Image 1 (cartoon, rainbow, N blue to C red):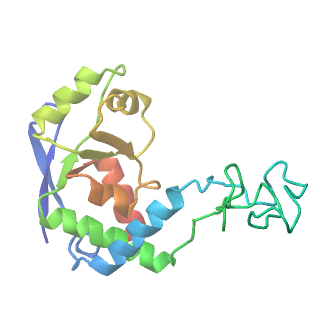
Image 2: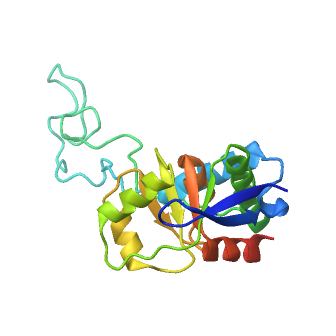
Length: 207
C-alpha cells in the first residue's frame, strides 16, 4: 500500500498517510475512464444551435414566376434552399446531448483516475488551508512551497470561500469538492491536491 507525505502550507513535512488500495491502488481501466470523459464533455454541451428550415423562413409565399414559358427553371418559392436567404436543408435544431452512465461505471472510472494519478506521483496531501482572507499571492506561495507546477486540482472537504477565491484568478488551478469531483477533471490536471478532510470523505464514499 502506497504512502503519501502530508505537508502544511509552508511545505513542511508533517506526517504520512496510507492511500486506500481499493481507491488509489487498482489497475486503471482506460476504457471506462474514456467513457466517463466522453459522458462529461457531452453533458457540458449546451445544444442551443439552431437554423431555420424553408417552413420557418419569413416570406416566399408567392410563386416567383409562372411555371412555364419564361425560359427559367421552375420555382415554387424564393425561400427554397437553393435561393439566397432561403431555408436550410436538414436544419439543426436545439437538442440535449446529456446522458447518464451507470453508478458502478462512474465509480470505477473515478477509482481508475485516482489510481492512475497515484501511480504517476500525482497525488499530494495538505493538512489544511488557513487563509485569513482571499489572496492570490497566498495561494501561489502555497503551491510553490509544495512544488506544484502546471495544472493543479485542489479538492477541499468543505466550502472555503477564501481558498476558492484565492485560486479563482489562477488559470491552471481549479477547486472542487468530494461531491463535485469527476474523472475528466482528475485526468485533465497534472496534480491533485487533497486536504486531509477531503481525503477522509473520498475514502468514506468510495472505499
